[in-house]
Image (tube, rainbow, N blue to C red; front, side, top):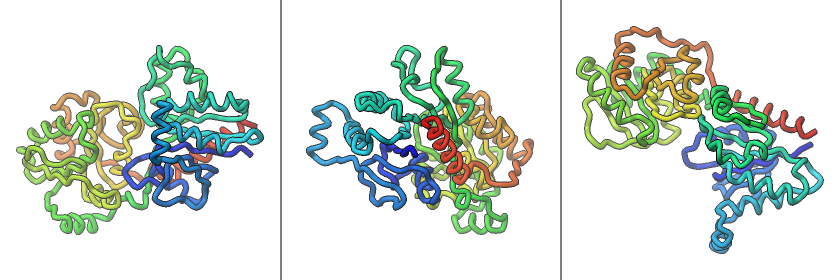
Length: 364
């Protein structure tokens, strides 16, 4: 039976914020994973159900890494320790296409390339290599794993030659934590957190220009004078210039995030870039929020092309956000009703096992 190796640029489990490390954490803790080895730097603690090959990061290794002029050298050393010439291997690499070329070279040099299957996971949306600079990347890998089917279609449009197997796996969240609460519980939680406004809007992201907060605040200044009993909660950014009706909450620990989704009524996702998926949208949806989002990247597919929320087709126009929020407050749009949780960690775990099993069949 082929062995499965995950090469992670983050130590797993990962103590900081990160979408795919969190999903792998859920996966390893599920008790039903199919990965045999993790190659990563030393984590604070280890998963009990998997073998580790630790990447060193001491002074002498950093000196050696500088001499060879390759930052990921330790990952290649660790991989060589796991590989042997009798077994077959599925090798998973996440968001690190440069190391794939090195891995391919190692496998060829060892004479085992035909007994190895490279899965390259890409968590963006648009193709990340220009047509001129693919350097046969898609011929080297055995499978490209994307986040949405729309990302696959985007790759097909961009490349005239795209010679690799493709699959996709939606992101998944812990739907036991990110879940809708009863209206009476929601009212009580709002009081406990100090919010009495009739409607609560929420934005949650890293404060970078492409995340659209500046544009959203511009829209809010136009909306707020017409609707005084509303508030916009901003998570992930500190106050720069006070804006009426806006409360900056700064960074919030992951474990505390669900309650802010749960007290909110409308989640705003004004991204100005082609997001691969939009994990916070899924968290908001499962907590009962109405979602208004940019129709960019993988977002339309996540919101089922408008079935699960309002899509802004021209998100760079401030007036379109003002109109969408105004329509929501005036009940112009129908509320979203979901019969069951969606995009769960359990679904992600199942799909990951299916992807691994398919890779093993390809090696047989």
